Length: 82
Length: 424
Image (cartoon, rainbow over all chains, first blue to last red):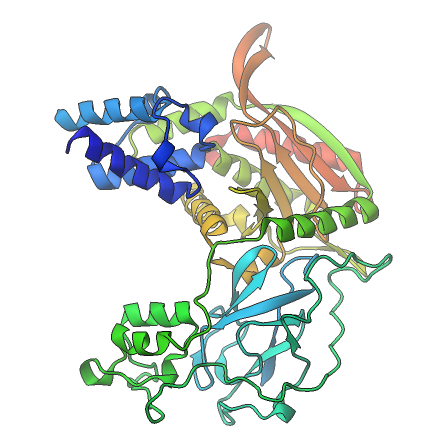
Protein backbone atom coordinates (compact mmCIF):
# COMPACT_ATOMS: atom_id res chain seq x y z
CA UNK A 1 0.00 0.00 0.00
CA UNK A 2 1.47 3.33 -0.99
CA UNK A 3 1.11 6.55 0.94
CA UNK A 4 -1.84 7.82 -1.11
CA UNK A 5 -3.77 4.62 -0.57
CA UNK A 6 -2.97 4.70 3.11
CA UNK A 7 -4.09 8.31 3.35
CA UNK A 8 -7.34 7.51 1.55
CA UNK A 9 -7.99 4.63 3.93
CA UNK A 10 -7.40 6.72 7.05
CA UNK A 11 -9.56 9.55 5.70
CA UNK A 12 -12.31 7.08 4.92
CA UNK A 13 -12.29 5.91 8.53
CA UNK A 14 -12.14 9.48 9.78
CA UNK A 15 -15.24 10.43 7.82
CA UNK A 16 -17.07 7.43 9.21
CA UNK A 17 -16.38 8.82 12.67
CA UNK A 18 -16.86 12.47 11.79
CA UNK A 19 -19.03 12.73 8.65
CA UNK A 20 -18.74 16.52 8.57
CA UNK A 21 -15.00 16.44 7.82
CA UNK A 22 -14.22 17.88 4.40
CA UNK A 23 -11.71 15.39 3.02
CA UNK A 24 -11.16 17.39 -0.18
CA UNK A 25 -9.55 20.19 1.81
CA UNK A 26 -8.04 18.20 4.63
CA UNK A 27 -5.04 19.76 6.30
CA UNK A 28 -2.63 16.90 6.99
CA UNK A 29 -0.66 18.96 9.47
CA UNK A 30 -3.58 20.23 11.54
CA UNK A 31 -4.10 18.81 15.00
CA UNK A 32 -6.78 16.17 14.75
CA UNK A 33 -8.08 16.82 18.23
CA UNK A 34 -8.36 20.57 17.99
CA UNK A 35 -8.96 21.31 14.32
CA UNK A 36 -11.25 18.36 13.65
CA UNK A 37 -12.81 18.09 17.08
CA UNK A 38 -11.94 14.44 17.65
CA UNK A 39 -12.55 13.47 21.26
CA UNK A 40 -10.99 10.52 23.06
CA UNK A 41 -13.77 8.19 22.00
CA UNK A 42 -13.44 9.26 18.35
CA UNK A 43 -9.70 8.59 18.63
CA UNK A 44 -10.28 5.16 20.12
CA UNK A 45 -12.75 4.33 17.37
CA UNK A 46 -10.18 5.41 14.78
CA UNK A 47 -7.50 3.21 16.35
CA UNK A 48 -9.92 0.30 16.42
CA UNK A 49 -10.75 0.76 12.73
CA UNK A 50 -7.06 0.99 11.81
CA UNK A 51 -6.33 -2.15 13.80
CA UNK A 52 -9.05 -4.02 11.97
CA UNK A 53 -8.10 -2.81 8.50
CA UNK A 54 -4.31 -2.72 8.73
CA UNK A 55 -3.54 -5.08 11.58
CA UNK A 56 -1.61 -2.30 13.31
CA UNK A 57 -2.46 -1.93 16.99
CA UNK A 58 -1.25 1.50 18.05
CA UNK A 59 -0.48 1.61 21.78
CA UNK A 60 -1.93 4.50 23.76
CA UNK A 61 1.55 5.75 24.58
CA UNK A 62 2.39 6.06 20.86
CA UNK A 63 -0.93 7.60 19.90
CA UNK A 64 -0.39 10.40 22.38
CA UNK A 65 2.36 11.73 20.10
CA UNK A 66 0.41 11.41 16.84
CA UNK A 67 -1.28 14.77 16.64
CA UNK A 68 -1.87 15.14 12.92
CA UNK A 69 -2.80 12.99 9.95
CA UNK A 70 0.75 13.39 8.69
CA UNK A 71 2.24 12.06 11.92
CA UNK A 72 -0.25 9.21 11.89
CA UNK A 73 0.64 8.24 8.30
CA UNK A 74 4.37 8.38 9.05
CA UNK A 75 3.83 6.09 12.01
CA UNK A 76 1.65 3.65 10.10
CA UNK A 77 4.16 3.47 7.21
CA UNK A 78 6.94 2.53 9.61
CA UNK A 79 4.76 -0.11 11.26
CA UNK A 80 3.64 -1.59 7.95
CA UNK A 81 7.19 -1.85 6.64
CA UNK A 82 8.45 -3.89 9.57
CA UNK B 1 -55.11 -6.46 24.12
CA UNK B 2 -53.74 -2.96 24.40
CA UNK B 3 -52.92 0.06 22.36
CA UNK B 4 -49.36 0.93 21.53
CA UNK B 5 -49.04 4.69 22.05
CA UNK B 6 -46.89 7.48 20.72
CA UNK B 7 -44.30 7.54 23.52
CA UNK B 8 -43.06 10.57 25.38
CA UNK B 9 -39.37 10.81 24.58
CA UNK B 10 -38.47 13.46 27.10
CA UNK B 11 -40.24 16.14 29.10
CA UNK B 12 -40.25 18.55 26.20
CA UNK B 13 -41.96 16.33 23.65
CA UNK B 14 -45.59 17.03 22.77
CA UNK B 15 -45.91 15.25 19.45
CA UNK B 16 -43.93 13.01 17.17
CA UNK B 17 -44.05 11.98 13.54
CA UNK B 18 -44.41 8.30 12.77
CA UNK B 19 -41.81 7.81 10.07
CA UNK B 20 -42.11 4.10 9.39
CA UNK B 21 -43.59 0.89 10.64
CA UNK B 22 -41.15 -1.97 11.08
CA UNK B 23 -44.02 -4.42 11.50
CA UNK B 24 -47.38 -4.96 9.84
CA UNK B 25 -50.74 -6.30 11.01
CA UNK B 26 -50.38 -10.00 11.63
CA UNK B 27 -46.74 -9.83 12.74
CA UNK B 28 -45.88 -11.41 16.06
CA UNK B 29 -43.85 -9.06 18.25
CA UNK B 30 -41.94 -9.64 21.45
CA UNK B 31 -41.44 -7.24 24.32
CA UNK B 32 -38.58 -4.88 23.57
CA UNK B 33 -38.78 -5.32 19.81
CA UNK B 34 -38.46 -2.19 17.68
CA UNK B 35 -41.75 -1.76 15.86
CA UNK B 36 -41.69 1.80 14.60
CA UNK B 37 -39.45 4.76 13.87
CA UNK B 38 -40.54 8.11 15.23
CA UNK B 39 -39.08 11.46 14.26
CA UNK B 40 -38.63 13.94 17.09
CA UNK B 41 -36.55 17.02 17.75
CA UNK B 42 -33.85 14.55 18.77
CA UNK B 43 -33.81 12.86 15.39
CA UNK B 44 -35.25 9.51 14.35
CA UNK B 45 -35.81 7.21 17.32
CA UNK B 46 -36.53 3.48 17.26
CA UNK B 47 -39.58 2.71 19.38
CA UNK B 48 -40.03 -0.64 21.13
CA UNK B 49 -43.18 -2.42 22.29
CA UNK B 50 -43.62 -3.16 25.96
CA UNK B 51 -45.55 -6.39 25.61
CA UNK B 52 -45.51 -9.46 23.44
CA UNK B 53 -48.37 -10.32 21.11
CA UNK B 54 -49.63 -9.92 17.60
CA UNK B 55 -49.97 -6.60 15.81
CA UNK B 56 -53.69 -6.50 15.08
CA UNK B 57 -53.92 -3.07 13.54
CA UNK B 58 -51.76 -0.08 12.67
CA UNK B 59 -53.86 3.06 13.16
CA UNK B 60 -51.44 5.66 11.98
CA UNK B 61 -49.90 5.87 8.53
CA UNK B 62 -46.24 6.76 8.00
CA UNK B 63 -45.47 10.49 7.79
CA UNK B 64 -48.22 11.39 10.22
CA UNK B 65 -47.61 13.67 13.18
CA UNK B 66 -49.61 12.83 16.29
CA UNK B 67 -49.58 14.03 19.91
CA UNK B 68 -47.85 12.01 22.60
CA UNK B 69 -50.21 9.34 23.91
CA UNK B 70 -52.03 8.78 20.62
CA UNK B 71 -52.70 5.08 19.95
CA UNK B 72 -50.49 3.98 17.07
CA UNK B 73 -51.31 0.29 16.90
CA UNK B 74 -53.21 -2.44 18.67
CA UNK B 75 -51.33 -5.40 20.11
CA UNK B 76 -53.39 -8.46 21.01
CA UNK B 77 -53.81 -12.18 20.66
CA UNK B 78 -54.12 -11.99 16.90
CA UNK B 79 -57.81 -12.85 16.78
CA UNK B 80 -58.86 -9.73 14.92
CA UNK B 81 -56.28 -8.60 12.46
CA UNK B 82 -57.21 -5.54 10.48
CA UNK B 83 -55.18 -4.56 7.47
CA UNK B 84 -57.50 -1.96 6.00
CA UNK B 85 -58.71 0.28 8.77
CA UNK B 86 -62.20 1.75 8.54
CA UNK B 87 -62.16 5.27 9.91
CA UNK B 88 -64.44 4.22 12.76
CA UNK B 89 -61.84 1.78 14.04
CA UNK B 90 -59.24 4.45 14.67
CA UNK B 91 -59.42 5.25 18.37
CA UNK B 92 -58.00 8.73 18.40
CA UNK B 93 -57.14 11.71 16.33
CA UNK B 94 -54.73 11.76 13.49
CA UNK B 95 -53.27 15.12 12.76
CA UNK B 96 -51.84 15.60 9.31
CA UNK B 97 -48.23 16.65 9.59
CA UNK B 98 -48.85 19.97 7.91
CA UNK B 99 -51.47 21.08 10.41
CA UNK B 100 -49.87 19.82 13.59
CA UNK B 101 -48.30 22.29 15.97
CA UNK B 102 -44.53 22.16 16.13
CA UNK B 103 -43.46 19.54 18.60
CA UNK B 104 -41.54 21.80 20.90
CA UNK B 105 -42.08 25.35 19.78
CA UNK B 106 -45.10 25.73 22.05
CA UNK B 107 -43.84 26.82 25.45
CA UNK B 108 -45.12 24.87 28.39
CA UNK B 109 -47.92 26.79 30.04
CA UNK B 110 -47.23 28.12 33.52
CA UNK B 111 -48.06 25.50 36.09
CA UNK B 112 -48.31 22.83 33.46
CA UNK B 113 -48.51 19.25 34.57
CA UNK B 114 -45.18 17.60 35.24
CA UNK B 115 -43.92 15.19 32.67
CA UNK B 116 -45.01 12.15 34.59
CA UNK B 117 -48.69 13.05 34.24
CA UNK B 118 -50.35 11.17 31.42
CA UNK B 119 -51.03 13.44 28.49
CA UNK B 120 -54.67 14.18 27.76
CA UNK B 121 -56.17 11.87 25.22
CA UNK B 122 -56.72 13.82 22.06
CA UNK B 123 -60.31 14.34 21.04
CA UNK B 124 -61.25 12.53 17.88
CA UNK B 125 -61.45 14.84 14.94
CA UNK B 126 -62.80 14.03 11.52
CA UNK B 127 -61.11 10.87 10.44
CA UNK B 128 -59.14 11.16 7.25
CA UNK B 129 -61.51 10.55 4.35
CA UNK B 130 -59.09 8.24 2.67
CA UNK B 131 -57.10 6.50 5.32
CA UNK B 132 -53.88 5.75 3.50
CA UNK B 133 -52.88 2.12 3.74
CA UNK B 134 -49.87 1.76 5.98
CA UNK B 135 -47.92 0.08 3.24
CA UNK B 136 -47.78 0.21 -0.53
CA UNK B 137 -49.52 -2.61 -2.34
CA UNK B 138 -47.58 -4.49 -4.95
CA UNK B 139 -48.82 -3.90 -8.47
CA UNK B 140 -49.59 -7.55 -9.03
CA UNK B 141 -52.41 -9.49 -7.40
CA UNK B 142 -52.23 -9.43 -3.59
CA UNK B 143 -49.18 -11.42 -2.74
CA UNK B 144 -49.08 -13.83 0.09
CA UNK B 145 -45.82 -13.66 1.90
CA UNK B 146 -44.07 -16.99 2.43
CA UNK B 147 -44.22 -18.00 6.05
CA UNK B 148 -41.73 -20.32 7.68
CA UNK B 149 -42.68 -22.97 10.20
CA UNK B 150 -41.97 -20.60 13.10
CA UNK B 151 -44.43 -18.06 11.76
CA UNK B 152 -41.79 -15.63 10.53
CA UNK B 153 -41.96 -14.32 7.02
CA UNK B 154 -39.12 -15.88 5.05
CA UNK B 155 -36.80 -13.17 3.77
CA UNK B 156 -33.11 -12.60 3.31
CA UNK B 157 -31.35 -10.35 5.81
CA UNK B 158 -30.67 -7.78 3.08
CA UNK B 159 -34.33 -7.78 2.13
CA UNK B 160 -35.35 -7.29 5.75
CA UNK B 161 -33.00 -4.37 6.08
CA UNK B 162 -34.20 -2.78 2.84
CA UNK B 163 -37.80 -3.31 3.88
CA UNK B 164 -37.10 -1.50 7.10
CA UNK B 165 -35.44 1.38 5.28
CA UNK B 166 -38.40 1.67 2.96
CA UNK B 167 -40.99 1.22 5.67
CA UNK B 168 -42.50 -1.69 3.74
CA UNK B 169 -44.13 -4.62 5.53
CA UNK B 170 -42.66 -7.94 4.44
CA UNK B 171 -46.09 -9.51 4.71
CA UNK B 172 -47.28 -7.35 1.85
CA UNK B 173 -44.78 -8.85 -0.57
CA UNK B 174 -44.45 -11.97 -2.65
CA UNK B 175 -41.08 -13.68 -2.69
CA UNK B 176 -39.11 -14.74 -5.74
CA UNK B 177 -36.20 -16.35 -3.87
CA UNK B 178 -35.62 -19.96 -2.77
CA UNK B 179 -38.86 -21.52 -1.44
CA UNK B 180 -40.59 -18.24 -2.13
CA UNK B 181 -38.45 -16.25 0.29
CA UNK B 182 -38.43 -12.51 -0.14
CA UNK B 183 -35.13 -11.30 -1.54
CA UNK B 184 -33.75 -7.87 -2.30
CA UNK B 185 -35.11 -7.68 -5.85
CA UNK B 186 -38.65 -8.12 -4.52
CA UNK B 187 -38.16 -4.92 -2.56
CA UNK B 188 -36.76 -2.96 -5.48
CA UNK B 189 -40.03 -3.49 -7.36
CA UNK B 190 -41.98 -1.63 -4.73
CA UNK B 191 -39.33 0.91 -3.87
CA UNK B 192 -40.57 3.27 -6.57
CA UNK B 193 -43.99 3.63 -5.00
CA UNK B 194 -42.75 4.31 -1.49
CA UNK B 195 -42.99 7.88 -0.14
CA UNK B 196 -39.43 8.23 1.14
CA UNK B 197 -36.81 6.15 2.83
CA UNK B 198 -36.26 6.68 6.51
CA UNK B 199 -33.55 9.20 7.09
CA UNK B 200 -31.41 8.15 10.00
CA UNK B 201 -29.15 10.04 12.27
CA UNK B 202 -30.14 13.44 11.03
CA UNK B 203 -31.58 16.07 13.32
CA UNK B 204 -32.81 19.56 12.69
CA UNK B 205 -30.48 21.84 14.69
CA UNK B 206 -33.14 24.57 14.99
CA UNK B 207 -35.74 22.18 16.28
CA UNK B 208 -33.27 20.60 18.68
CA UNK B 209 -32.29 24.02 19.96
CA UNK B 210 -35.95 24.84 20.60
CA UNK B 211 -36.34 21.54 22.47
CA UNK B 212 -33.27 22.25 24.61
CA UNK B 213 -34.51 25.79 25.26
CA UNK B 214 -37.93 24.54 26.38
CA UNK B 215 -36.51 21.89 28.69
CA UNK B 216 -33.85 24.11 30.22
CA UNK B 217 -36.28 27.01 30.71
CA UNK B 218 -38.58 24.67 32.57
CA UNK B 219 -35.65 23.41 34.66
CA UNK B 220 -34.61 26.92 35.64
CA UNK B 221 -38.22 27.96 36.30
CA UNK B 222 -39.30 24.97 38.38
CA UNK B 223 -36.23 23.41 39.97
CA UNK B 224 -34.51 25.16 42.88
CA UNK B 225 -30.98 24.12 41.97
CA UNK B 226 -28.07 24.04 44.36
CA UNK B 227 -24.51 23.58 43.18
CA UNK B 228 -21.40 21.95 44.64
CA UNK B 229 -18.02 21.11 43.22
CA UNK B 230 -14.88 19.34 44.34
CA UNK B 231 -11.56 18.27 42.86
CA UNK B 232 -10.82 14.57 42.52
CA UNK B 233 -7.28 13.19 42.26
CA UNK B 234 -7.22 10.82 39.26
CA UNK B 235 -3.71 9.52 39.90
CA UNK B 236 -4.83 6.03 40.91
CA UNK B 237 -7.42 5.85 38.14
CA UNK B 238 -4.92 6.97 35.51
CA UNK B 239 -2.27 4.48 36.57
CA UNK B 240 -4.75 1.64 36.65
CA UNK B 241 -6.13 2.62 33.24
CA UNK B 242 -2.69 2.87 31.64
CA UNK B 243 -1.81 -0.58 32.95
CA UNK B 244 -5.11 -2.01 31.81
CA UNK B 245 -4.83 -0.61 28.28
CA UNK B 246 -1.12 -1.28 27.73
CA UNK B 247 -1.34 -4.81 26.36
CA UNK B 248 -4.82 -4.53 24.92
CA UNK B 249 -5.82 -3.85 21.31
CA UNK B 250 -7.79 -0.62 20.78
CA UNK B 251 -11.15 -2.41 20.66
CA UNK B 252 -10.64 -3.75 24.20
CA UNK B 253 -9.39 -0.56 25.81
CA UNK B 254 -11.21 1.58 28.32
CA UNK B 255 -11.55 5.34 28.50
CA UNK B 256 -11.49 7.45 31.65
CA UNK B 257 -15.12 8.38 30.99
CA UNK B 258 -16.13 4.74 31.60
CA UNK B 259 -14.55 4.94 35.07
CA UNK B 260 -16.23 8.26 35.79
CA UNK B 261 -19.63 6.89 34.76
CA UNK B 262 -19.22 3.75 36.83
CA UNK B 263 -18.08 5.65 39.92
CA UNK B 264 -21.05 8.00 39.56
CA UNK B 265 -23.53 5.15 39.12
CA UNK B 266 -22.21 3.44 42.24
CA UNK B 267 -22.40 6.64 44.25
CA UNK B 268 -26.00 7.14 43.10
CA UNK B 269 -26.87 3.69 44.46
CA UNK B 270 -25.64 4.87 47.85
CA UNK B 271 -27.44 8.23 47.62
CA UNK B 272 -30.86 7.33 46.19
CA UNK B 273 -32.23 10.84 46.87
CA UNK B 274 -30.35 11.95 43.77
CA UNK B 275 -31.59 9.13 41.54
CA UNK B 276 -35.18 9.33 40.34
CA UNK B 277 -37.88 11.64 39.08
CA UNK B 278 -39.77 14.55 40.60
CA UNK B 279 -43.41 14.45 39.56
CA UNK B 280 -46.86 15.43 40.74
CA UNK B 281 -46.53 13.27 43.86
CA UNK B 282 -43.16 14.71 44.66
CA UNK B 283 -39.94 12.73 44.42
CA UNK B 284 -40.03 9.11 43.35
CA UNK B 285 -36.73 7.32 43.75
CA UNK B 286 -35.78 4.89 40.98
CA UNK B 287 -34.99 1.26 41.69
CA UNK B 288 -31.94 1.18 39.51
CA UNK B 289 -29.55 3.68 38.01
CA UNK B 290 -30.26 4.43 34.35
CA UNK B 291 -27.47 6.89 33.92
CA UNK B 292 -27.95 9.51 31.24
CA UNK B 293 -24.89 10.64 29.37
CA UNK B 294 -24.91 14.01 27.64
CA UNK B 295 -23.52 13.49 24.14
CA UNK B 296 -22.46 16.38 22.00
CA UNK B 297 -23.62 15.96 18.42
CA UNK B 298 -21.45 17.26 15.63
CA UNK B 299 -23.37 20.10 14.05
CA UNK B 300 -24.51 21.58 17.33
CA UNK B 301 -26.84 19.35 19.24
CA UNK B 302 -27.06 17.60 22.54
CA UNK B 303 -28.75 14.39 23.52
CA UNK B 304 -28.60 12.40 26.75
CA UNK B 305 -29.53 8.74 26.31
CA UNK B 306 -29.35 6.38 29.27
CA UNK B 307 -26.96 3.58 30.11
CA UNK B 308 -29.46 1.14 31.60
CA UNK B 309 -28.63 -0.25 35.03
CA UNK B 310 -25.15 1.30 34.87
CA UNK B 311 -24.17 0.43 38.44
CA UNK B 312 -24.25 -3.30 37.73
CA UNK B 313 -22.25 -3.27 34.49
CA UNK B 314 -18.61 -4.32 34.61
CA UNK B 315 -16.22 -1.83 33.02
CA UNK B 316 -15.69 -3.61 29.67
CA UNK B 317 -19.47 -3.95 29.21
CA UNK B 318 -20.07 -0.38 30.29
CA UNK B 319 -17.42 0.80 27.82
CA UNK B 320 -18.98 -1.17 24.95
CA UNK B 321 -22.43 0.22 25.76
CA UNK B 322 -21.02 3.73 25.99
CA UNK B 323 -19.40 3.48 22.57
CA UNK B 324 -22.54 2.00 21.09
CA UNK B 325 -24.66 4.76 22.60
CA UNK B 326 -22.40 7.54 21.31
CA UNK B 327 -22.33 5.98 17.86
CA UNK B 328 -26.09 5.62 17.67
CA UNK B 329 -26.64 9.09 19.10
CA UNK B 330 -24.58 10.48 16.24
CA UNK B 331 -25.73 8.22 13.42
CA UNK B 332 -29.28 7.41 14.44
CA UNK B 333 -30.87 4.32 15.90
CA UNK B 334 -31.36 5.38 19.50
CA UNK B 335 -34.21 3.59 21.18
CA UNK B 336 -37.16 5.16 22.92
CA UNK B 337 -36.31 3.34 26.15
CA UNK B 338 -32.86 4.92 26.09
CA UNK B 339 -33.87 8.54 25.71
CA UNK B 340 -37.16 8.39 27.57
CA UNK B 341 -36.08 8.64 31.15
CA UNK B 342 -32.59 8.50 32.59
CA UNK B 343 -32.75 8.61 36.41
CA UNK B 344 -29.82 11.05 36.63
CA UNK B 345 -27.43 12.46 34.03
CA UNK B 346 -23.69 12.95 33.65
CA UNK B 347 -22.13 15.59 31.48
CA UNK B 348 -18.41 15.15 30.83
CA UNK B 349 -16.52 17.77 28.87
CA UNK B 350 -13.63 15.57 27.78
CA UNK B 351 -10.10 16.81 27.14
CA UNK B 352 -11.07 19.89 25.20
CA UNK B 353 -13.29 21.49 27.77
CA UNK B 354 -12.66 23.66 30.79
CA UNK B 355 -12.04 22.86 34.44
CA UNK B 356 -15.57 22.96 35.77
CA UNK B 357 -19.07 22.53 34.38
CA UNK B 358 -22.17 23.64 36.28
CA UNK B 359 -25.02 21.58 34.91
CA UNK B 360 -28.69 22.29 34.53
CA UNK B 361 -30.92 19.49 35.77
CA UNK B 362 -32.98 17.78 33.08
CA UNK B 363 -36.54 17.53 34.42
CA UNK B 364 -38.06 15.37 35.80
CA UNK B 365 -34.64 14.26 37.08
CA UNK B 366 -33.20 15.78 40.25
CA UNK B 367 -29.44 15.66 39.69
CA UNK B 368 -26.89 16.52 37.03
CA UNK B 369 -23.29 15.46 37.62
CA UNK B 370 -20.62 17.33 35.68
CA UNK B 371 -17.01 16.35 35.00
CA UNK B 372 -14.69 19.04 33.69
CA UNK B 373 -11.58 18.27 31.67
CA UNK B 374 -9.09 16.03 33.47
CA UNK B 375 -5.89 18.08 33.65
CA UNK B 376 -2.50 17.84 35.31
CA UNK B 377 -2.24 20.28 38.17
CA UNK B 378 -0.30 20.81 41.38
CA UNK B 379 -1.80 18.98 44.33
CA UNK B 380 -0.82 18.58 47.95
CA UNK B 381 -0.09 14.89 48.55
CA UNK B 382 0.77 14.13 52.15
CA UNK B 383 3.40 16.75 53.00
CA UNK B 384 4.57 17.26 49.44
CA UNK B 385 3.46 19.03 46.33
CA UNK B 386 2.81 16.69 43.40
CA UNK B 387 1.68 17.18 39.81
CA UNK B 388 -1.26 14.92 39.25
CA UNK B 389 -4.10 14.33 36.86
CA UNK B 390 -7.23 15.69 38.50
CA UNK B 391 -10.79 16.47 37.55
CA UNK B 392 -13.38 18.86 38.94
CA UNK B 393 -16.67 17.12 39.55
CA UNK B 394 -19.77 19.18 40.16
CA UNK B 395 -23.31 18.46 41.24
CA UNK B 396 -26.44 20.38 40.41
CA UNK B 397 -29.21 18.98 42.59
CA UNK B 398 -32.85 19.70 43.40
CA UNK B 399 -33.38 21.45 46.75
CA UNK B 400 -36.96 20.13 46.88
CA UNK B 401 -35.46 16.67 47.43
CA UNK B 402 -32.20 17.11 49.33
CA UNK B 403 -29.69 19.57 50.73
CA UNK B 404 -26.06 20.41 50.16
CA UNK B 405 -25.01 18.23 53.06
CA UNK B 406 -26.13 15.11 51.23
CA UNK B 407 -24.81 16.45 47.94
CA UNK B 408 -21.36 16.88 49.46
CA UNK B 409 -21.38 13.32 50.78
CA UNK B 410 -22.35 12.14 47.33
CA UNK B 411 -19.46 13.95 45.61
CA UNK B 412 -17.05 12.57 48.22
CA UNK B 413 -18.40 9.10 47.47
CA UNK B 414 -17.56 9.55 43.76
CA UNK B 415 -14.09 10.60 44.86
CA UNK B 416 -13.74 7.51 47.07
CA UNK B 417 -14.88 5.20 44.25
CA UNK B 418 -12.28 6.65 41.89
CA UNK B 419 -9.46 6.00 44.38
CA UNK B 420 -10.07 2.25 43.91
CA UNK B 421 -10.42 1.81 40.17
CA UNK B 422 -9.62 -1.90 40.38
CA UNK B 423 -12.85 -2.38 42.33
CA UNK B 424 -15.05 -0.52 39.86
